Image (cartoon, helix red, strand yellow):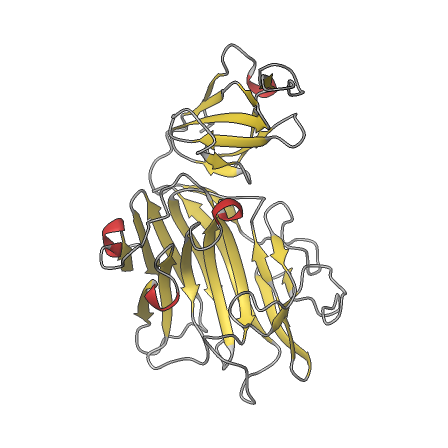
Length: 369
């Protein structure tokens, strides 16, 4: 099914915006309105991009049909549209603003339809770069707020201790994303943290990925999401949703933690539920991990969308003084996949920790609710 697009831009052409030209007028006035462009996702869904021809302009937008203002979300990255929505946007530079660009989408996609995925396909015959249209990287060894020990390496980095000979991440010819934890020298560790920030994001839907993680002292694999608005409101106000997260060696029973974080509920006051795998199963085996994100609700499951083990709503915050539900503020979220080493939660690796070790991801998929 092709997406149906109806556009009204205050009597201006859809792809070219409107307003008072491409340059702001001195002392206020108007500037050119943002443009809206799309590219196909899957099964009628599209990925929407906003842009301004005015250098330095900020784009504010809404997806609920309301008129955008400076209190609306700022545009940070392309976002998935898989439901019937109206996107409205304005551009602002200093005291000059634009007219409103409006684009209505009516894909009418049935619930449970696959609308976006990265299958980590690779037919090159050699290990390949993760799709640069989706994935970028956090890099360095700053501890990332958790006293982590690893040096995160981007694809292609040869800056010591990173190595192009032994890359920290790649898409293998086996069709898996590989993230390697390595110890190139005593006390020095390398790994990777991939993210879709600035490239791809989504709001609402069922996120699912299939993964196999290493389990040993000091390992901290995770797949999680942050709001695009982190650049404006910082963490934790942007919201954090942790779909896969666990530390150290396999437990008995083995487990995964699903949690959410926001203003007033972080760290020890965060909201989380531990899922215990059935007897004989571990996280070091292949499992599917899922999140169902709807207005007013975040749920987690493992291996079956009907196997929901954690449900959070705004009422979950009632017992937490000052807690603010951050997941319905209008922002899309970006994806993060990483394998941390050490840190405040797991502690450091020890002599039992095997290096190198790898985390594998088979696919990342988004379905309609």
